[in-house]
Length: 313
Image 1 (cartoon, rainbow, N blue to C red):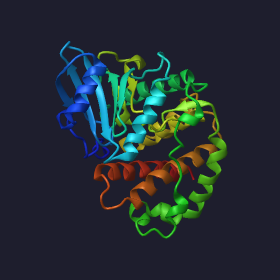
Image 2: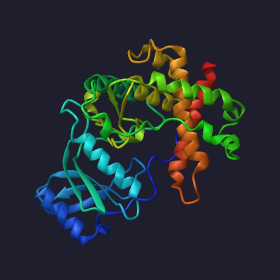
Image 3: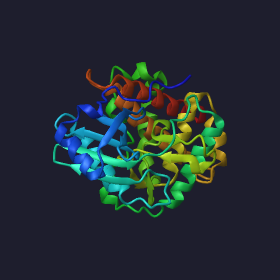
Image 4: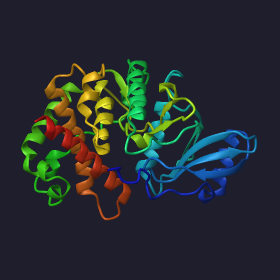
């Protein structure tokens, strides 16, 4: 079964930006914007659009107001710090410029040809992405970004769900194994130490595939605000857990990938518990104003990690 829609519900158009902000961005680009089209993928509020410049060049813009979405503005500022330091060998769109007036925060990236991977996963596409992520881990070790300028890993949350009325609705198995999940999550911290820059949000809605470049070279990894420094296997297990939503068994993927094949059993289980804990906590504790697509996605991804973990117990 395919996952829920992989795009947030709170996007705004280029034309909705204040005129002064549009003018400032055109100044950064050195050319007027002749057209704009919103693009799918990701859950951040604000603008996510392809801009066609009067010169014929395409660029990608993400922008948000800190007055209405302060957390997302913070993400954009952190992504600027991360992407400005990524090496050219990384399969990541190049940061072309940025704008920050204290309220509006905007990032301008090179536009890359590609589309979100089809869901359910096509095995060949998943293989391309796993190969790219494996190479990316090598490229980003040691981390080119100082640890202090990256995020905390978005992992864990089971201890906050004791007695939560919505937990059984998301996963009856988790509700019945909460103490075990709390213990596994606590054990994850020791196994996550490392010096690899991780994407931290490596799901199919943050990947673009170029149909004209069928190999790993046609894979682009986008949206880096949640990058953190740690063990190289974390992004790989995140991707593999997502494959459960496509009816694929992640164990053969894990056993054949060089970053995960030799991991101790407890290391894998601890990561899956911590990964699911963050997602399930997000789904269970979301307030009434939360983005419904985001909550549906968190629920689906959390259940996928739990299903893999349960199959290993």
